[in-house]
Length: 554
Image (cartoon, rainbow, N blue to C red):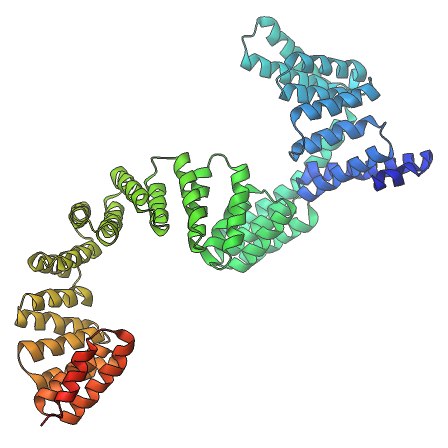
C-alpha cells in the first residue's frame, strides 16, 4: 500500500517516463529469456513489466507480455492470462499483438472459435505485416482439424493462411529481427558445441573445456556450456568441478531436468553426508518429471533411510509402488522400510510380492534370505523361515550366505545333522571363508564328533588367525574332548592375546591351569574372569567364585 502511495505522489510525466524505462528493461530481459531461457531473465522481465503497470496502467503491451511470462512461470492460470490479454485489447483495439496473445491463450483453453476471431482481428489490424497471426491461425486450424471431424473447407482455410503467412514473413520486421538474432546466437552455440564434442572424441579434454568456457562468455546459452563442462569433469572423475558447474546451471534455472538428475545422482553417490541436498534435487524433479515419478520416489526412499527417517522412507516407497505396483525392487525396498519401522506384517506382505515377481533368481534368493530372517528372528515361525531359505537355495544353489543362514537356523532348533549338512554344502561353495568351517566345527562339537570338530576349527583358524572365538573353541575341544589341558591352554592364551577382555577364554584358561596344577595361574585367570564378568555377564558368578575358593581349600 505504501509503495502505491509513493507511485501516486509522482507527477504524470515522471510516471510515464518511469513506465517507459521499466518497459524497455522488461523488453530486454524478455528477449534475453527467449534466446537463453535463463530463469533470472524471466524473473527480471516480470518484475519490470509489473513496475511499468504500476507507473502507467494504460500501456497495453505490459498486460499481454506479463500474462505470457507469468503463465510461463506458473503464477497464473490460463483463464487469468486470457483476462489480462483482453484488458490489452480493451486499451488498444487495433494492437495486433494484443489480439495475437489473446487468441493464443484461447487456443490453449481449446476455445478455437474465440481464438480464430482474435487471430483474424490481428490480421485485420496489421495487414501486410500479418505473417505471424496468419501462421498462428493456420496452426490453430490444424489443431482443431486433428481434434475433430474436419471438412474440405477447413483444409483449404489452413492452406490459405499457412501459405500467405509464409509469404508475408518478408514484411514482418519484428519476426525477421528476432530470427536473425536467434540465428546468430544459434550459430555461435553450434560452433562451440561441435568443436568441443570433436575435441572430446579425440580425448583433447583441456581444449574442449576451453571451448566450452568461451561458449559461456560469448553466447547467451551459458547454462548449456556449464553443463557440458560438468559432463567433461565427470568423465575425468572430477566430481567437485562437476557439482560446481551443475549448481551454477541450477542457480539460473532451478528446474533444469537433466542437471537435476545428474546432481541428485552425484550427490547421492559421492557425497553421502549431503543427504538433504540430494533430497531437494529429487523433490524438484518430482515437480517436472511425471514419467519417472516411481524411480524418483524410490531414490528418495533410500535417502530417507540414510537419515533414519522411517516414516518418510515408508511413505516414499509406498508412492513408488503406487506408480508401479508390479515393480519387485520397489516392493522389496518398501518391505525393508516397513521392517525398519517394525511394521513386520506389512514387510512380509511386500517381501512375498517381490519374491513372487522374481525378476532374477539370484536377486530373489537374497530377498528370500531377508524374509526368512524376519520369520525366524521376529515372528519365531521357524517352519516358514526354513521353507523360505530352502526356496531361496532352489532359486540360487550358489548362494553361500543362504546356506549359512539355514545352518544357523537348524542349529538354533538343535537339528544338528541338518545344520552340519548346510555348513558342509557352504564349504563346497566357498572353501576360503572361515565362517563355514567355524560354524561346522560348532555343530560337530555339539554332535560330539570330536576329531571332525578339531579339523574344522583348525581350518577356520588357518583362514582367519585373528578370530579369538576359534582359538577358544579349539582349546575347549582339546580340554573337554581330548583331556589335553596342556594343548588347550596354548589355544586359550592365544584367544586372550587376541582379545584381552574375552571372559570365556580366561575362565577356560583357569580350568586348564587348574587341571595342570598351576594354582596361582588358575587363581589369576579365575579372578580376571570374575572382574570381566561384571560387565559381560557371560558366566555364573557364584560358580566362578566357588572355583576360585576351591583352589585354596586344604
